[in-house]
Length: 296
Image (cartoon, rainbow, N blue to C red):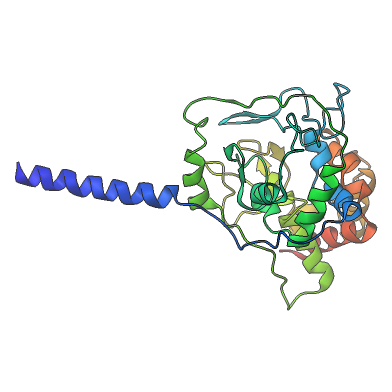
């Protein structure tokens, strides 16, 4: 009996230790929230970050960034996710959010309602600079308010328990800022920053494990469609080359959607191009292409 009690005590202590570790806060470097945002620069970041393609339902006629897209939403093994209204509306959108709240969501994946699901790519946005966060916040404050209510995620138990996301973060999320590789060129660093940061190419074009996290060492190797992000092809240099791409043609495809084989990139990527990459600067498209074709 005494051994049984001691064994139960050990299990309880270990369980408590695991719980404390898994539920501890996951936060990155403190941001400078005194910076003044520039809405013009922020408007470009809206395009750079793919916000319009994800948060606008063009089929319903709702306002820009009023939530979307419509239809099936972002399906995954954990449920279906819908991008919320992020206009300046005080209740339907994020008009009442402070810069600190916005920064917390972008940097640490935590909103006023609690932990955010990683279908929102805060794993990538956390790499953005303090000034960029302030600029993006300023731009979103100028987006016309739209009263369209956000559509609730369709998630079953136990994935609908937001507190459990603390454990996911402790296992897979490392909030940090982008650090340039001094051994590489400015263009290479800009490309890598965009791919892993605000443009979050890596979020869609990488395979996911059973818990929905990107499989380590397989970044940009393509997603067959089994996890969050849906089906997306490999962006590894060898695979792109096999499809006929070089840096110039890849940058061109990000502008007009045409592949080297005169096919058209449609579906979700077509929306990304229309609402995002086609409106980037030529320099940013070239940087992403140069980085990808360099072979990560």
